[in-house]
Structures are given as structure tokens and as C-alpha cells.
Length: 335
Image 1: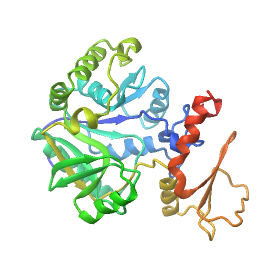
Image 2: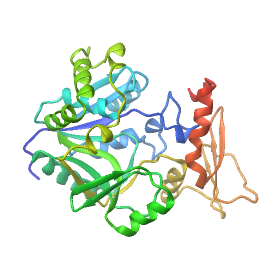
Image 3: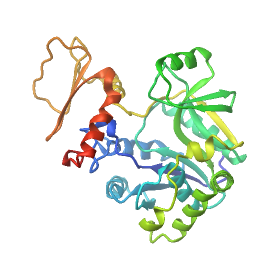
């Protein structure tokens, strides 16, 4: 495909992966863990998009920018670094990237903590999205679902038109979505012209637009001011723009995708890569020490230097409750 506009890969690196505690910590969030064929999810994200974009931009924060720098320097990848002083959610993070870009630049916006398999299908989806973005659309990527997943949001669509965005459903609703056949998993990936995104943000959430613009214009070598940043409303890009704009298109994507948002999804990925499980589906992560499970089925044992976690695979979403409790007690087990 011939590109007529410069393409920038924008990587969003916020988030601490609270559902993957104790592996994921504030000092080493899940996107920087070298758990995946000796690479981190962040490094895989950079590599996956290297041939698809002309430049790289990272929107990170003061806690993780050094981790991104280490990966990008290892591969000698030049990049623009935007360092948030405090997290203000995805609408502001993407606004900073758009403000830092040429108005006609095409931005491919991806999280840094997803697993994607199927290079050819992925590249086809990106190229299709770029074509639509060049026509003035804001494009989201919907993943063809393989099961009634309750851990993802959904996109209801007719062709490439978005009918609605749906929050994470219960099991009954998820089964209905799959049965209907016109629902896709919401990947949280986007593609658009920088100027188009800013125009739509200004139209539908002028406060986020104005205050993000002010903060960006006051940046010092990509570092954003804390006090000024606190004035920006914390709102997701879905609520700020995607659910309100009339310029939204969706690319139905066939590549294998997971946001690895829970130990159940990590379990499934590791099994697909040959990680050992016993005859009852029990798995050990983080240690080679002999571990035996008696009378247990589909249990995950997670070992780290100062904390262990034992969980039923199907209860993976509840790990966030442990993280929240430790946070409430200011525990150093989160560091």
C-alpha cells in the first residue's frame, strides 16, 4: 500500500497491570516483564509496528519512561518521548501525541501490553485503517471474537460502521453478542489523522482539548508539568470521542489478540507456547522449584521473591481486589 501521509506509531505505556500482581509491580509493570519468548510486551509492540510506521512516539510517565528508554536504546530506535507527570487517562494521553504531531500525520495508537499473533493479518488491518484515516475517519480495531469473553468490551457494528460500544458484559450478554455475529472485541487500538482527532476532541470535550493543549505547549523536552496536568479531566478516549463522533469506522480484524489482562489470559498464552501444566491443568509461573498440586484443578501458582499467589484460573479477575487491598494499606509489595 502506498502511504501518502507520514505514519507515527504512538505507544501508550500507562497502567500497572493490577490483575497480574505479584508479577506486575509499580517498578516493573506487566508491559516490561520479559516473560514472552525472552521479550517484553513493550518490546514486541515496538517490533511489530517497526515496518508499518515512519516514526515512534511513546506516551509514558515518570515511573516507567526509563524502562521504555532501555528497550528502545537496545534496538537503536529513535523516538519522541512524552512523559506525563500524572496519569490523566487515554483521552489526554492521545491528545498530547496528536498535539506533538504534524496535523496531517497518521497516528497508529496502540497499548504496549497486548499479545498479537498473525503478522500478515495484523499488517492488513493496519493498512486498511491507514486508508480510512487518510479519508478523514477515526478508526478503531475490532477483533473477531473466538469465545464469549467477559473481560473485554465489545463493538457492535454493521459493516465498517460502528453502531455502539458496549462495556464488559456478563456471561449471558457475551453469549448473545457471539450469537448475533455482529459484535467484535474492542482492542483499544486506533488510527487517525492527528488533526481529525483534535477536531473531534475539541467538538465533544472542549475542556480536555484546551487543557491538554495548554499542558503540551508548556512541555520541557517532552516532560509535562504536574500542577497544570492535574487540571485535565481524567476521561477515556472512548467516552470523550469514540462514543460520540460521527466519523468512526471499525476494521474487523482476524489476527490473534489478547490484552493479557488476567492470569487466565496469561495461562492460555503460555499453554499455547508449550509452558508445562500437569494432568489436572495446574500451572507454575516464576520458579523451577518442584511444585506438586494435590486434589486441585486449573490452579495457577505464581512465585516471586517476596510474594506468592495461588488462584483458581477462573477467578483471575479477582486478583485486582488483592492489589486494591495492598494499595489501601500502602504495602511495599506493590513496589
